[in-house]
Each structure stands twice: as C-alpha cells, then as structure tokens.
Length: 127
Image (cartoon, rainbow, N blue to C red; front, side, top):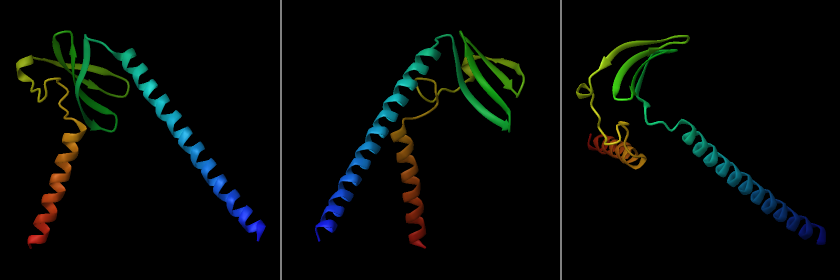
C-alpha cells in the first residue's frame, strides 16, 4: 500500500516537473523569438526603400511594387534576375490604410472571417 501511494506521489511530482520545464522552455522560446524579431526589424529599418505589394505569378516569379525614395517602381523578380518593368505615378496607386501597407489589424481580419462564417451558417439554416 505504501508503494502505491509513494508511486502515485512520484508520478504527480514528475508530471508537475515536466510541465514546469515545458513552460520554461516555451517562455524562453517566446523571449528569443521576440528578441530576434526586434533585432531583424532594426536591421531592416529603412526610410528610403520599401516593398509595398507582391503578387506571385508562378513558383519562383513575382511582380512587386516597391518604393525607392519618392519613386514607385514595378519590378519582376525571378529566380536569378530582377527586372524593372515600369515607373508608376503615385496618384495611380491605391493605399487602403494610412500606413500604405494595405493590411488591416489582426482583429479586423479575424472579425471579417468570423462574420462571413456566421453569415454562411445563417444562410444554411434558412433553407
């Protein structure tokens, strides 16, 4: 009887120890990831060049709109080459957000997805 109680207690202690170690490793991973992201952001912070938009044409071919200084350029990016296609006047570009990235916040995107799913469920129930 004492062996089973002792074995059960040891099992709980082992489980708690493994759980705490897992949480510690998870925390360290989170902190290192945040540090790395901040470091990389500072390395690539540049006011003169920015990739505004990218569209994939095939496996390794892209068309990008980039800003260099005050000029906006369309470039073709392939596996081994980058080719300038044309210069785009600023008034021809559409900037949905004030930051020019064209992306909403995560919360806005999540709410849009949830509302679409909710509307789809309602339409399915009406039939």
